[in-house]
Length: 211
Length: 225
Image (cartoon, rainbow over all chains, first blue to last red; front, top):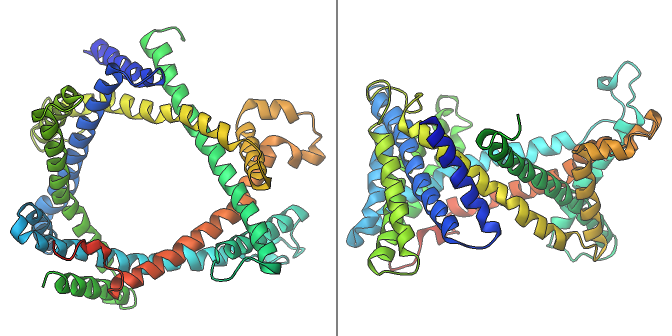
């Protein structure tokens, strides 16, 4: 069984990699398997974790969870065209609740806390007894403050990017470009490490060429 | 009724959740509501799974191009469902852990789902490489900055970066590529990320207000539906 599973994993891995040559039957087969299994996997996981785990087991303690089940059932009314419009009710519940939650959470985490974390004191007891930060810390803090400020100026489109405002926005786009470059570099590295992992699986686990 | 009730629900639920933050006995309301989301998600998945079946069965019955693969998708879907819902091969009864050693569900997850998923994502390395060929052409100042930042980060995370700049004395250690990569990540990258995050935060707050106040109604779909 173990050998069969290993060969199956290798067969499927090579099937996906074969797409690099061109779109072919082997790739399409593995893709179809992946789509079917993924849908089944997520359905099963959601069923046992969310439905059985939270609703079925906890139904005695948390009667209010019936509201969630009722809203879920309303969602299924979409399948009956005549009364399908009722499925908007659970949808609007989700939209309303998400809006209410996110309004507060994003205001706190993405705005207030980020602004607070951007403005550092240059001379403070937090840097030690001398009340002064080293040159590297001061430069780093200034870069973070000015970079965030200029980046925000770039995103402000209610005023034309001309004159001093335009120059500030120009610096902002450079900062954003550095961010994109760094994110890009990170993404490349993570995908490469995944690919190395798959090649390692094929060469060491499957073929036993690397011990 | 068709549009008014949903707008009222959105307004009431959204407003109650905002005020609940400021009323101590209602503090946990948000957490309870997220539990509802989880339960609703299960029912929504009935629609999602049903839609998947509908699409592939239509393809199959009408003998559309590549209809043979739809059989594989449908069989794979039901097979995974059966293994997971009936806990086939589990070393205990139905209440045993879904991911118990030896269960068919876990075996398929380890030997089919994980290899397929990770290889699919690994394949993106090649598409990213071809995208980087286009992005890395320093056509203007902004593209050049992106190129330099990405190049330093890439080199800084490989032994080559240490090898190339290892000779730089410790007093100028910030110029060593691995250290430079760390500085870029911690300072200018952080600043850019923060500007983007604050922008997203402002966007979310304004969009939430539009939804709660009923100004934004696109989520309700067409007028007659």
